[in-house]
Length: 419
Ligand code: NAD
Image 1 (cartoon, rainbow, N blue to C red):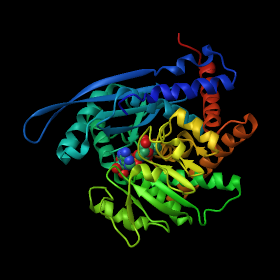
Image 2: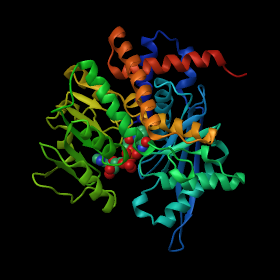
Image 3: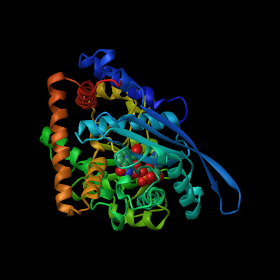
Image 4: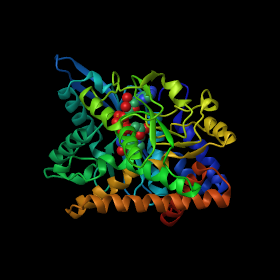
């Protein structure tokens, strides 16, 4: 996000600490402190009224050490190069921590898509795709959905790329509609992965979801689906919010009903009601007396100004970078367990990987196979991170970075620095 907070610096601070804990020298990982490639593009769009507006777009490839770069595309008014750089680096660590053969990338356009018509959004997406076309492709860099982008946007990206190539290239992007090579389970994958990582933690703590309360910040793809799946597992979802409102009901909100309402109301829960529901502020939501806080909106939401007020004992990061390094320190002293973004929300990229493999094989897997494999990969990664957490005596975020960094550095050493 724009402003004082610099998410890339936040990432570097955690990375440097992980490197130090692993006993790495600067030379071992210096190449990973800077993205491999940063592209800024201008995206002119002829608006419906005939005016031409120019938007700024970005695609950053942080690392291709372990495979093709991979990462979503975000349409948001506060998207900027630093944010995209941080998001790209987090993708490198995420793919490494869950051990899938990808590097990290991310893209964004500084735009408020709510102010565009569907035709304008389509033209914006196609022109942005054309502008980043030289650096994307199934073997190079594979985009996916992120904030304010969905399967429809992915379909336009796939079509634009394919038109330039002269043949259909489904593997250029993941999170596509099923009809053009999308994968079963992809839409739900990030939320499902968040739910799995929370269950993995509870297993270690020998606790059951029954009676545990959750507050969810952000009710888009990750927040709403994650909340719904958690509710199905027995958690009580006591609060939900989006950019427009926050809602609280101690004995649990009907998530399916709230999702159906959002579907019909511009993807917002503003105005949703049910007996016993009260409207609260987003700040109040973050400080609720619940067991679990599930941020699923944007970066920098839990920071030095509000971390002390957090009363949840567990934070499961659906969003990327919702907790700053300063907030982490405060949460640590309070004994709050944070399941870090690069582990907790990796379900999306894991099933994106499955989608890409299915595209390369021209074969479709069934949903049970996908969800079972997602669960396995999440569990294996959680166990590996937990082991480092216990042996090195570090919080889960540091443990996840240590697992990821060690893997990327090993790969880097095997490949060497060109030439
Ligand atoms: P989305 O656009 O579907 O939903 C975002 C939600 O956050 C919306 O409900 C929006 O209203 C809400 N929001 C925005 N600003 C807010 C604020 N200040 N307070 C409260 N709510 C606010 O996006 P998404 O795909 O669900 O992504 C959410 C987060 O999850 C992002 O950090 C994204 O990078 C991360 N993530 C997404 C995926 C994926 O597969 N979509 C994968 C991994 C991580």
